[in-house]
Length: 328
Image 1 (cartoon, one colour):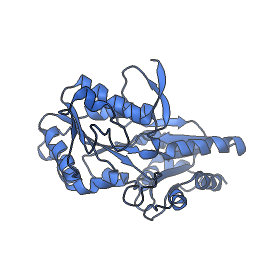
Image 2 (cartoon, one colour):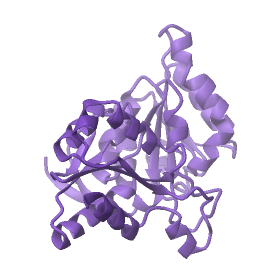
Image 3 (cartoon, helix red, strand yellow):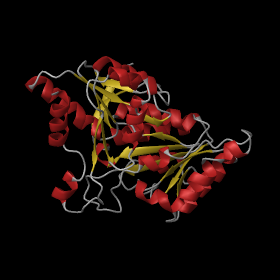
């Protein structure tokens, strides 16, 4: 398939439009997604093509959005619900965690909940503490939810199409700073299965596991240190945090003998701890030449000040210094 360069936001929009054309049960709902085109412009033009019945502007109520999406999904539709900032999912957490996540189990599989909850996530836009959090560990902790966080336009489109077709609720997290990043995306039809990670860079000295907007940063650091220090660094992007491609991570760590986990979310109780435990509990543990290391956000609210904001999450400098220490 031929590929062209489009942005992460355009890839998200293409995935939604293609699935809405393919399946009349798919519809899109959220705050200001129609005429306004969404808080980050992701859905510009969609209401003109699909109309207000299938691109529905909602009241400013995350509980209503997630609750309505849950009910619609259980009734035979395939809703895509957008929350303007992932921070606000907490307002609808009962609907997400107690209803959408558990309904299929509690009805013995007779009810499916094929809904996608899309939400911009992360810091870097100067939006301060209530609009800049990385909360993926919240959703990963709830049985019944699938959790996806792509790092490239190619992954975003392929994974979103699979999420829309899935019969379970999927939390689809989109790092805000990636929306304007461009990358190659095929023009033809393709999907990426949920639960399959990707080797973004091959190496033999160190495995770095990362996701979301940290992936491009890790790749830049890996390339820089390959040139300056001769380090051969493998970069693994799980892409889907639940279900997690465990074997891909274990095999990589067995090959390299060292493991580092880099994520934007705060260190304490972050999802990196789950991956560290996975490595420690697997056969990869016996191949380690150094302790597993985590590089993550500081345990502080995200500041408004741009310099403080930048340093509240991993920076290239902090990633590179940790790589050098681990390689000693």
